[in-house]
Length: 232
Image 1: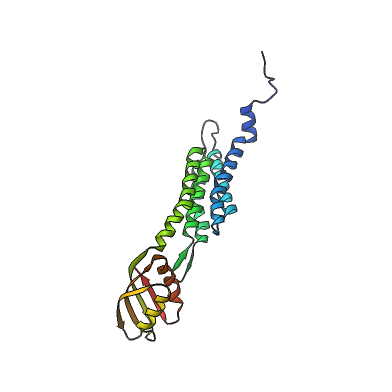
Image 2: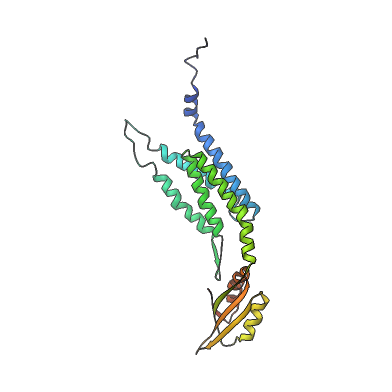
């Protein structure tokens, strides 16, 4: 009969001493964040491979710290185990906000910001030991980013009609507006022009590819005589 030497530490003791459970969690966080970050890197997004890995890794570490920082002392637990984790949810918003850019009515980076937010949530789940939930969420995020991107591309190519209100200086005519919009693939179906003391307002019903409406939302305001563009 084999008897363990009492001087040799048990597996549970070694795991506890070297925090091998934490090492496994951090490794899983690297894999989950890396999988999502790789897709973002291939897509050429600002928050790519390293960014998503670091966010997921940091969230997992902070979640583990949040759980263990208030370990019971004398049978009494000190502090709130969710306190640090809650700050991750708030703090990740600052990084997400940095990926969102706005330029003359066109907003970009919303998907990158949302990805950063959900990667932090996956890291928190891993840090708390919810591995199945974290891996399931990772798979769903990959499906959304890779699969639905093609669907979104097809939707942007579909043609639709919208109303638009464009305020300009009186130097611009309806003919100029028609030619300018036609250059971007947008056709005016109906138009009304209202002259005021200091400006001219075009009430238009437009038709064209969905993606081109975002193009004119950004390009028209760059003209010196265009004062405001509103697309419904």
